[in-house]
Length: 266
Length: 331
Ligand SMILES: Nc1ncnc2c1ncn2[C@@H]1O[C@H](COP(=O)(O)OP(=O)(O)O)[C@@H](O)[C@H]1O
Ligand SMILES: [Mg+2]
Image 1 (cartoon, protein in one colour):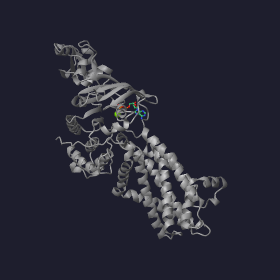
Image 2: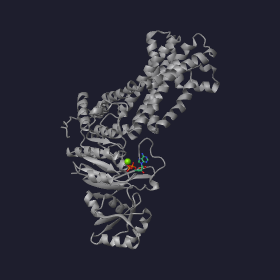
Image 3: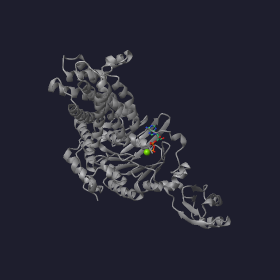
Image 4: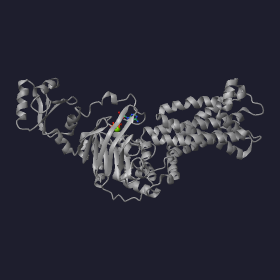
């Protein structure tokens, strides 16, 4: 039964040199999941669609925003919310892989240490981009329109997905620290839910009580939503745009190294 | 020169001292069986050697690489199959193997080619294109083992490779493991099963409470028990204790009762006259026998002699924290 095990040329791998190909291998692995189990994608879209319908048809009538239709106002919030809720899956998936012993296997391989994390966050961003695009189509069916042209429309989608990408790294840190699927899931909602609702995602913050308004104005999600909204609605170049890019970079600068440290020690 | 050299490794998790000074020397091309009960520190030892865990103190080298300082280089020459089958349920068997091959640094074509050969060898070709979630427990284990071999490792770590398998799959897996060794791979295997260590390992280390308490070939360990073992079972299980008391004094030690199966075992210097003596005493006590034999000592006897416990006994409560690291599959 002995097969002639052809001697394999395993180069003495320098794991840093394989960062890109290792990340691609894992991104592919993660995305294949959605190809094989398409219902996973369906469920990722059902929730945001429900939010759109809920806000447009249930609350929308009671909310009036001067100079813009509520649907056009809302969609920026939906894009960002969708990306951020989606990003909580990053930590959950990592916890799942840890539970199955896959992370142990990866850590025993001569591969880049950052690749597991990058493969995960990148594939989650890819999924978010897909869902956000689908939300655009749903929006168009119920009357949503990008008001500032194609380039701005693309920029709006990419900005919301980039924000989700940065939040994926926060979620990864939580998953790597907690290591348990259910607890990670619960821990994500504890901060993501209030942060998203205490922002300008669904209603203008002007209507909030003053303490909440102060919080909302400092909330990075408000910054991201306002920037996305400015890209959708058009008008003058908005400082929120630069601020939101700065937020993404700052979050990445903090959480990428933190996650790599946590990953080395799990 | 040994291919695995471990000296004075300790590792604690908070209060729990998982390893309390482990020394090992394993020769190239041999199978080393690390045998111990649940919680003895087997997984921790493997995790240290596979570069997953940095020890608190002590040094270890594998294939000439220090497990801490040279960890990145070491990973190119080792393979690990952990305690739970580390395979992706959604991917097919082939995709799993290819993925690991790519991460070992194989080019896509080589990963595919080698993956095919390895699946063939583990009798998984028929299921190569099926998602792993359709695999049986034994198939998953084989796939996991296959994955640990894609990189043609010099040293392979198998942490309880057959735990959770039914006896038939277990024996099947043993055959694959024996084949590996024929090819010169050095294997460190952990197990709770004495038969497994006996069947597979050239050298056995008995580990208990984070220390290797005895080491040697299966025969060497058995000779530590000394002489032969008188082993019997009484017809009425309730009389086991009385029977043990009746034969006390025949051997060198107190008779041992295996509560799991009701056997009474007794080490004896020499088998001469022992059977007659035992039968006579039991007869006098009015105890009926079910069977009685003189046999060579097993590793079970060794473990009992060394620790006063059978290997299946629960670990002491202090070593069983309420919650082990979640999601790690410590069992
Ligand atoms: N990550 C961990 N955190 C806390 N305790 C641990 C951890 N890993 C192992 N232990 C403890 O260390 C001891 C040895 O465990 P382990 O090496 O898994 O034993 P074995 O594999 O022989 O069953 C046990 O008491 C276990 O609970
Ligand atoms: Mg273990």
